Length: 331
Picture 1 (cartoon, rainbow, N blue to C red):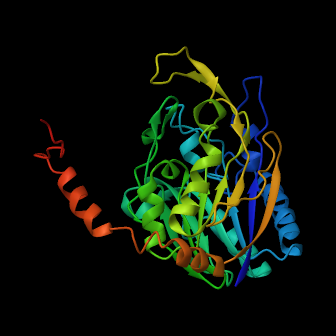
Picture 2 (picture 1 turned 90 degrees about the vertical axis):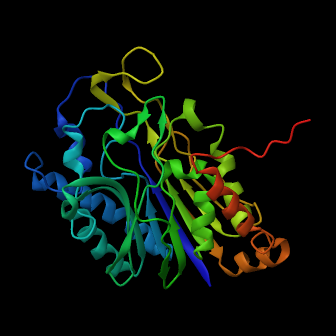
């Protein structure tokens, strides 16, 4: 019942000169009219080599960072060219590429992308595609919580997720994907856990000034509270955008979101954790997790058994009503 988890993050080049989209598309996994096949093939080759290393380490489950096929441009309010990175979760080029890797290396692949849902009018979603080690698409999990803080106003681009809290039964354990801002919401972790998740991945793209003080705490606390393993994944580097953009905080227009600080780690149900990856460089993190430990820690602390969820459910139902009155007792 031991599973080897593989976490991959990479850095986008810092850019100091205005450059067209072609600078970025060397890292794109889907084919658009502006992208040459050679550039896509080069990116596939790079990723394939990295996964080869993971395979040599005996890795069972691979997870990439949030929106790993593109710059994190969801705060510029500039629809083009960024929406052109969107692709089908079921049969897009990135998914097909990951299916081949999964089957070749007998790995489960978690691939967070910008999804274009053509079945529903081309709606965009921030989505993690989960691919079985057999190469089949197990399903997808969409980002439940969209930030509206500082630069991060991602509702310009995609909707809050509508897939709920799916957990994927794989040969190597039950996994879930709590995308980025969802880590700030304890109930979001809880619902994945109640649905049976043993490992919850948190692929993110977050910057130092905004969240670095919270980063070492949240995923670790979620692992403790929910008797499961959590994997906090962040990108590194600074991404520069040609056109300046403004935030909702009244600051001056600027060309970047700040520094993505990496520091990815894995936390266990007892609160122990791995060292973090570098704050400034690409990194690979391989962690061995014993899934028996979830039950062992659960039997010790019994947080779920003592959770009183029926009481919370009743009070939460009242709290979302228009006529809700807080239960405050006064003299």
